[in-house]
Length: 309
Length: 272
Image 1 (tube, chains in turn yellow, purple):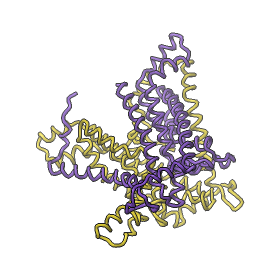
Image 2 (cartoon, one colour):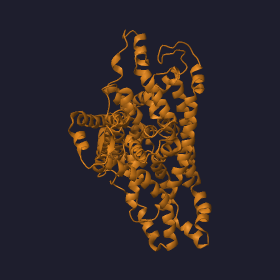
Image 3 (spheres, one colour):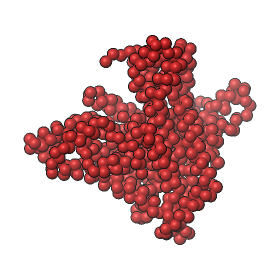
Image 4 (cartoon, chains in turn yellow, green):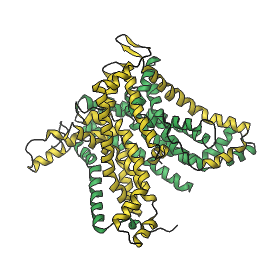
């Protein structure tokens, strides 16, 4: 699916030299090393995906899903207002979540990069800790905070600011944004932090010595140099947000569903597998498109390695 | 290397003060919900929420008396261990192979990354369709395990690859030249070098598998994993023991990840 940047690092040029005189036994070893993983990926990723692609042009009838070759599912998915609007809404939620996440994460990443020693280690650990647990749980925790008997309402009522619980804290698009930004913050904060951290402090000192005002140091040096981190983080959060299923289902309320929830409905209630397959391909295509476009500026490999090494 | 104090990043005093204040707020929002859920887990009230009606541990007892929870915990551990070992083994072999140049290398690399790139729900749906068409009934150690290995494999590869990439193919070639068989080379040369990185990867993979939800939901049969069980409880009705259950789940997965991070850190410093 992904064809975007596949830069494996500069050390590959060294590997070329090493592989120069590759012998027969070495070739067998290479085959033995690659075969199990490749076989797994082909059988359990490539073939099921190919099968889904095939089924997306089939037809689901009351008797079951039958092979066909027609694009009715795609036409329905892209022209019916219900599905088309939901796709736009999902992309919009993805964009807004990414912007909100960027705005909340940049200052904290900046603050972390400024720290040093023990304090930095502790703050980083505290940043990671919540992300080492299930996002289902981390989404669930907002229910007893924003709900009618939740912490916020009870707190405001105890203070006498309100007399009735506020019903609008939960089950709307705002709650979805809050949930998504909360659940995926680390994926934005970490790459930005790593990018700022890499900036040579001498550059900043030099600029300051030459009389640059702090604001300009930030705008002309720190911001441009942290740009790769901003791109990586934004791409990752956007991809995660447009695929959201749990957050809209739990916090979004009846009208707060997103594209993934619509896909799930085809299997859980509508029993329309062919159409569900087509919707799955549509969502994957959106993701792939974004990756290809973004891949022009940022190595996709870096995006996924960033938070995990 | 000269280390200049990171303080040079500071823009101005007033701005710095604001930044620290913001950081404080950020961490409060980050931890507030988790602290709240911990407080609610000992609230002696059959409605999840405030006000506090006394302190009790009965919800924790209830959690461990719920057979579904205990079963799910066992299932998650079993699948997690198997998925972590299988994915790490496949990833290690792939990473060793990736030190060489071979045809279609970038195609294979994209194939490895595919499960991360694919929207979560699609990762589950493709397996549902595939196994459904083959008439394979969803079950813990077939469909769920496969879904988990799919999900964990790219992360295992991405953590192992940089570690493996550092060590020289010449080491193995030397051993081969001295007459070692491929398996001996693997056992006596490769494994000792990558051992700690491999252990860290297995632990990290376990915690990814332990938390996996969306890809598992659609291929789950009778036996459920922890996140799927937790999800069906939330969707079904908000049972009063849910906060206690959430706390237990958080503690289990955070502990596993913490140990993994410690080992991974030690492995990283030793490699330098």
